Image (tube, rainbow, N blue to C red; front, side, top):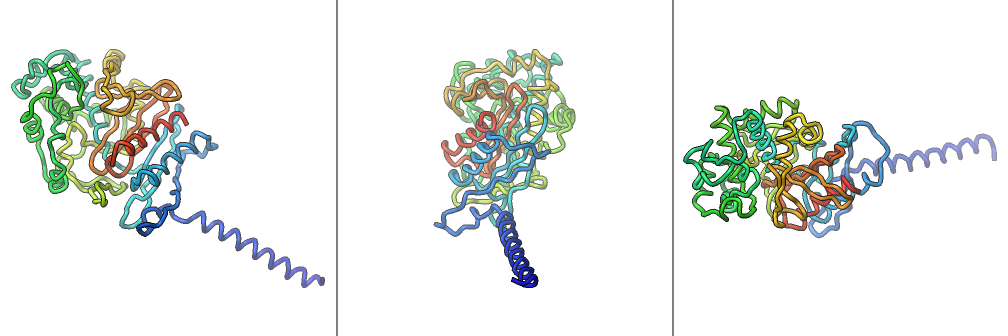
Length: 401
């Protein structure tokens, strides 16, 4: 073969190699939104889980297992999108997304986007109450009648502790709000008085201190107590005492008529077929569950509260961690403190946190004793107990692998 022929052959070979490399690179850039775009009846491919570390350390088997658990929330449980963040004991964080953030456009969920954190709000409220305890303005075992006269029926027999711990027996107002109230009235403002009117029209579930049942009503009452004692809104107290104190720039208590989330955020969906419920009035949840945050900020909050002890003294933290059995009414093994849950881990130990469900979002997570913090948020409300437990299971996988 002549030198010229050899050169031509080599050039052709080089072009073929470059073409293969380009094809591989193009495939790698395919967007991870095919699950949302696939026609009905078309098997969806396993979604890619997008990961954004602060610094790219080597991926561990635990990381791989966590990514798979997030992907399963899309493929198995049919959640539209997932946002998650994991902070290791040294403070390094990884953000994850999976699925679709907007079913109309196929756009991916934003990394560390804003989500409605629902009942995680209760932990913020509990912190403010315990700060008032530290200031000598509240006693946990005094009756709510002491601080909020003539508001709660039978209030002289219900303690502040019982309201914080869901042992008051007060009817849960959200149990008596039909789904149509949200579907048709999600743009309506509801005052705390409106919410209590629903609850107090029903009899108590049990005498105070004689059982455990989750009650959003108790935290509406606690919100009113905070406002009565401080002369400021519960939103202002949480902002001053917690959010600003910790420098949480991506956490806020929305105004009563503030229906939108700050950007960036995924769309929120509810029901089947999926209804877009991103825009909604949060007043129906108020002190029981109105707050908005990013997964990273929620991790930072629990880290500051429980690992760094930056919000409460040892005595108040000890009270917060005194738990009671929930009787299987939440997820398996969970015990409830004062606005705080303790969940056992299959790898030993436990994590502390809370969790929250509102139409359009479910959020679970917390922090382990070594400082590892996890938050997982999905962009639709729980579609059944199995799917809900899979979200809890994804959190456990982030802790245990």
